[in-house]
Image (tube, rainbow, N blue to C red; front, top):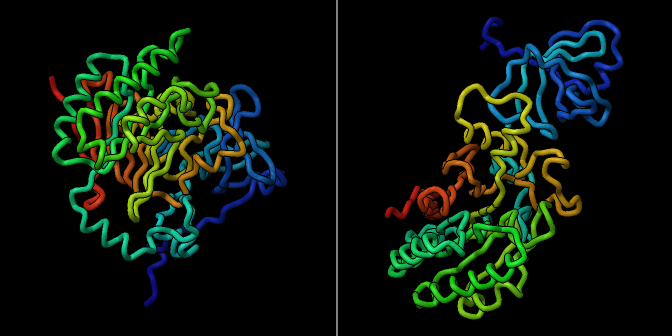
Length: 374
């Protein structure tokens, strides 16, 4: 059947930056894929392997997302007098994990001892489906030196002692006052107190895992990502009382049966809003943030002077293919949002936001809001 020419979709061809730089005439209706940079203060450029061109964003229509330096974007507009006048600014469409795996097969991108992706295992899929009671509890800003937080944790552990979760994922910061000469001593005593508290619930000690993800103000080499685990000398007493305690890096990766879970503790929403090219007009910041991470395939699409990254370990921040769950523990308000078959969530601040946390049920892939009320 022939299609009506009026209903046919208009097609565009992606052009490299050198195509613009090599032209002396005006070029209209051009789309370029490149990275946003600021080569001169106050002037944004679009850069790709072939060159960089200055952009005029005064008449630009920004699509959903938080556009910062180092983000890859699709820019549409016209080129004249060595300036690319951008009329529309958007992210490249995110690629669903199913599409990626259909192309690459069962290669294990996620990590771990196996060379084959766990999603290829029928046995794991059956176990995941049959274990309907499995749940993973996520908490952030667990200030162990705060008596109110410890009281809330006691209530939490008491409530879950009869139906033990698969894991508790506790994210830093683990002290309310992260600086000072007594920081390490306070942190060590706080972990000892937490170990004593958990030991009062033998069912949890035996059946649940306790995973600790460090925050930016916990002991570590400055404000550089990824962060190593909290030193053993600080946590040895807790590990002795709770054998199933695991102290991980930040970010960390958790494999539950066939599901891939990434946990990242960093105040990314604030940093991206502070450094975005244009702040969104609507206030649905979580949706913009989620779309940005999914489209960029990276947990920290920020320039190095805003968030330093160890170049040799940058691959630990990549989320390609998209995992099943991405938990970005942040001081920002709690949210959960599913985008491109990936669940993005923020448990919120347990210490500052009235003991809010998230519970994830792998069998149903549901993320549930939870709170311990006074």
